Image 1 (cartoon, rainbow, N blue to C red):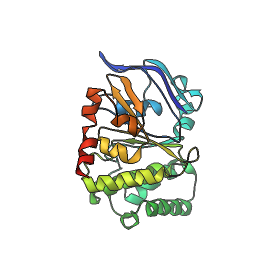
Image 2: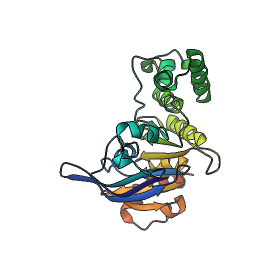
Image 3: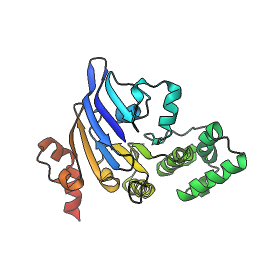
Image 4: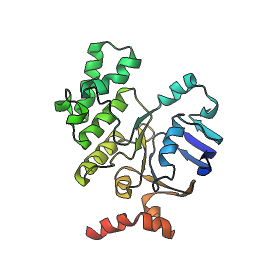
Length: 251
């Protein structure tokens, strides 16, 4: 369980999160929607303990991470894997070495075991032919696949965190990435790996999530399923999700 209790976070005089409270089970598939600068990525950083709130508590699996030291946070972070916006690959490392990075740093596996795990991951994500290529030689979609493989290599997370994973990609590639994200979180709760995706692209969120939260002015102003989202009477939210109705109109 991931729980925010009255979380406040400001940058200078700008309040990003204002008494934010919510609960998310590890196995859920959740999209956090909102415009640029609303604090969506900040929520992911708070979940990982990369930053700390000014006020409030963040409870992960029953533990208050706001009072934890860096060494204590390591075990909490192993419950998650994050795919950063635009992939954030190591430019100087090949696909193989990008995916193997965390295994070499933290796993204690032999090189033979690392190679076996790396090949299994990139095979699963359909990028085996790119194993010896450098990031600059990859398309945007391939870079995102490598980033996801690298995130999965670190362990067996309970929940995957995605920060605007389709930014800058063409519609077809975005569809492929969304399909892969959904497949990685397939199965039935509570046994499946969950996901939290933060995005301003409502159509992408609709392809991977079952629960939708709308972040505005530091607060969650909507929290519900797709049916409730489409039926909202909030004029601002209806304008934000307008692309859903546009897509339906073309079908």
